[in-house]
Length: 107
Image (tube, rainbow, N blue to C red; front, side, top):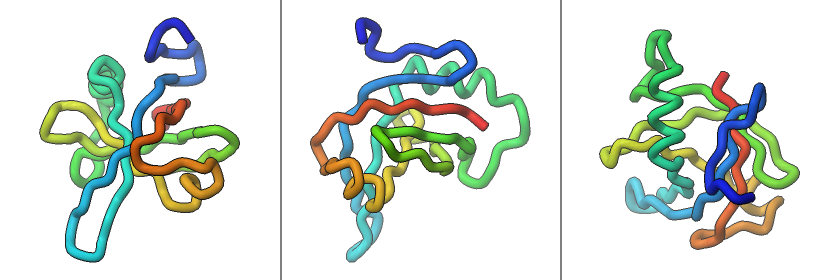
């Protein structure tokens, strides 16, 4: 794909992102990808309704052959982050540091 992130007509956003781990609390770890800043800005602009908890936005995500619904969350850095659950990482053979192609639709 020539554009590292693109809005797909009627389909949402498509981008590549590296998986990273956030250690929230001792014993708990979460794996995320960061949405590109321009994608985050477009989502923020198109999300006109009331915000959900923590400023989250509901999305449908496809990575490889896995599709699921979840929420993205705003970060201190100004972009959204997407949690990638263990079942998806296992099914798609992904680990921290790997790049994933993410197809994301705002619900």
